[in-house]
Picture 1 (spheres, helix red, strand yellow):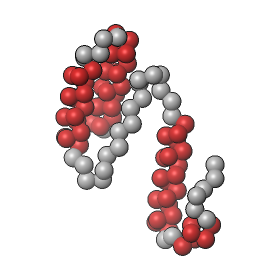
Picture 2 (cartoon, rainbow, N blue to C red):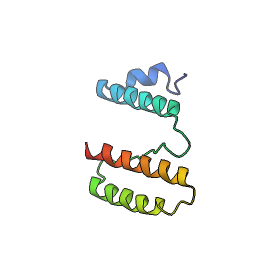
Picture 3 (tube, one colour):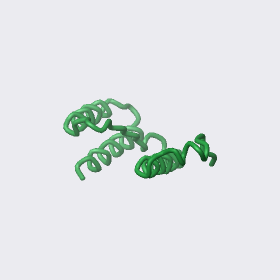
Length: 91
């Protein structure tokens, strides 16, 4: 993969910024390679100051809404993905 930043721009960053940039690029690379089975992949992006309780409430509401999905297979896949996301937030 090619980087959009030039070598000079990378050198101008501080050590901590360069490490953070590397981590972000690695995360984006991993997300690009992530694959799920249909509706079983959820991407949840939280701003740094977002309250976890607010996100948990939103996921509970989404879980309730997922109960209205007509296709049994899709309903189960969506509910499983939401429950897995809820469990990850508890960690």
